[in-house]
Amino acid sequence: MKKTFLFLLLLAVPFLTWAQTRVNASEIIAKINRGEAVTYKNAEIVGVLDLTRLDNMQLEKKADNKNSTNEYISTVKAPLTFVNCTFKDDVLAYFNPDNQDVKLFNRKNEVYNTNFDKAVRFENCVFEGYSAFKYSKFRDEVSFAGSSFQHEALFKYSKFSKSANFTNARFTEEANFKYVTFPAEANFENATFRREANFKYAKFSRDADFRAANFNGLANFKYTKVANNMHLQKAMFRGDEDFKYTQVSNRMIFSRTEN
Image (cartoon, rainbow, N blue to C red; front, side):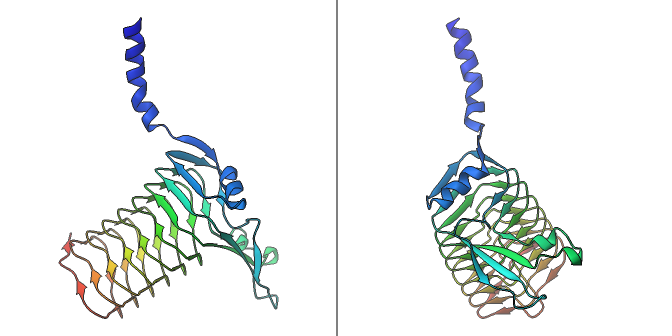
């Protein structure tokens, strides 16, 4: 009997090690609204994690005519840490209701954005839904290292104040970093871009590190500005590439692999 119990226990160990705790997105939002630091490891997050309607939401810009937009800002004031988590639904730090209903007479002319005052870590996570951080301001360090985005990763117009770590990240659809500002270290080493890697008009105030990155779609660096070196050693380009009007102050270091 003891041997049978021990055998069943040994069979269960790998499952218990792998299994993720199920967490409702509403629980996370409640912690953020209380100003608490958020830390989850090995968790499955269910429900839309909507960071755009926090309790501290404020009207940032009021529409002054029927063609302008009311802009609302929510602010996450405590650190966010997610390690080895799976997000089953959308993660939203940007939301525009008019993108849901394109009929002109139903337009709300509203947009909701989210800023982050403290460090943000989504490491080795899986985003099964949409992830939208458009216009977000990250005032501390940011890491999406090892994370997988199964839909468009929308970071367009985002502003990073400190280091941004996307090493080993995997982008199944477009990685949209158009117009993004990177004033500190920006690391995309070993990242995989299955569709377009869109860094058009992006600005790197230091090095832009794309060593050993895999570009399977369009590598779009048109009008990109890099203040220091652009590292592309061992980068693999399997799709088209656009470096037209790219400005690199020091060196663009290729030593790349083409296939």
